[in-house]
Length: 243
Image 1 (tube, helix red, strand yellow):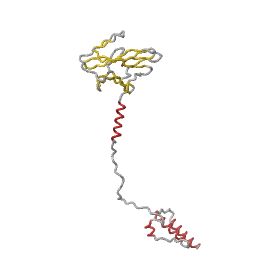
Image 2 (cartoon, helix red, strand yellow):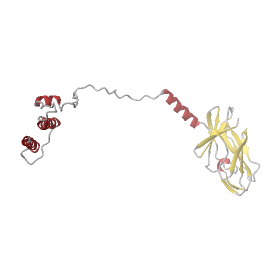
Image 3 (cartoon, one colour):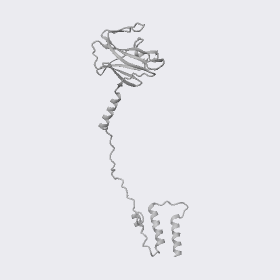
Image 4 (cartoon, helix red, strand yellow):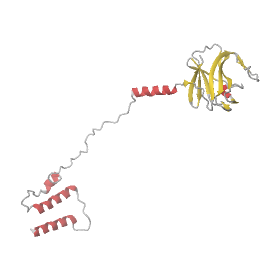
């Protein structure tokens, strides 16, 4: 028995090492054959086992020793079951929601008159005039509307709500656009008036207020319907309803 075991190990050593110095790379089925052969040599004399040596062609056919499930072969021409790629279509509900959101962002808010540093601007009244002059200032400016047009004069009060003297520079602080019946009529005129709201640059004492105006040029025959002024400052729009 001892001699047979020594012979078995000798055969195994020859099979695994070969005759050369290089390491032989074995496929998985070849390893399985050698494993089965070695197991059979070692256990064939054991009366308690029913293991028997499998023929080479049977091992090759089964692909592995008894009890191990061989890997399934994959056909090269198997039809793919993956669904074809499709272009995503925009969902109608999502699109409508996005449009509503954009419209909501574009809507203006009510003008709050806050110009920072305690400076507050509030709307007073409006009038339609063929000419404008400010009698409340020492400087006398008289503006005449060109033929076929008239002025929309919009009055504002600028107030320093701080308890200290404050510089009030509203030059290029905001843009003012007149709309009537949902349509743009004109932007405010740039004038040399000392009380022009769009170009006001002065200093106000604590709690001091100043009367200012914005002038818009409108056609003589134009009737103001749902008129409002869109004020845009700091990339934010607000509206002042004047009629």
